Image (cartoon, rainbow, N blue to C red; front, side):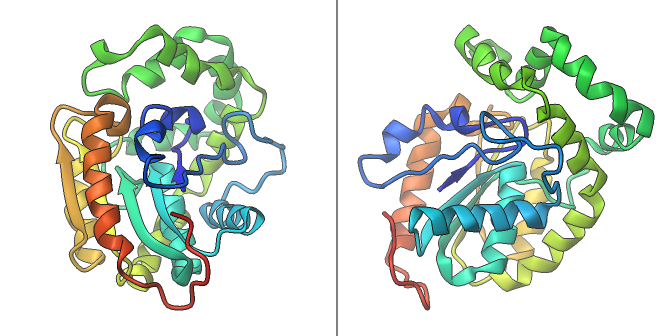
Length: 263
């Protein structure tokens, strides 16, 4: 199960899905509030609610247990989902996950908590197309790798009403959500976990990986040199090689209480 990050959607995984489907059954949803899924004004923006929605998706698809891969905000969602239902998660791969130890972006978060900025930012961001491209370019370690197709693909859902509004609402609960995430880590320390970062990540601090690893009792860390916040976009072959090695090693480890494994 591949879970995209904030302002991403299933499109984010288009390069890795063909590389993974030789060995696995792969699911890559647009989470509510992102991509082309529903984005109601009353959608609960809390991280815990996103985790419950992810578990509800597993129920709807008839998946009793899976290998869970989460990127950025999707990584934080994956952590909470694993903590809520650890017997359903065979392994956890967190790709530059949002976490309380990253110092990057704290000023931007504070700015978006300002009521005036929170009110005007979604309308401005939705109407100014170059802003969409700015968001995408800062995710890459080397922006020269970005194709026009990629820029258009990420920009397409951002013009939908409600997408930026939902993202701004997430910022309001960020501090409480990160505290909840930190408290959940001891509950998932027994789940095989891989941490993947790009060395040039400008969104979530790569140095925060060591704090996460310590909290997860030595989770494996892999750094992809030269990549930014989305290493599976910039270096899909290397990312899949690392992920496949980890998944095959974790595949043999049974999960207590699981009945059906989707692989």
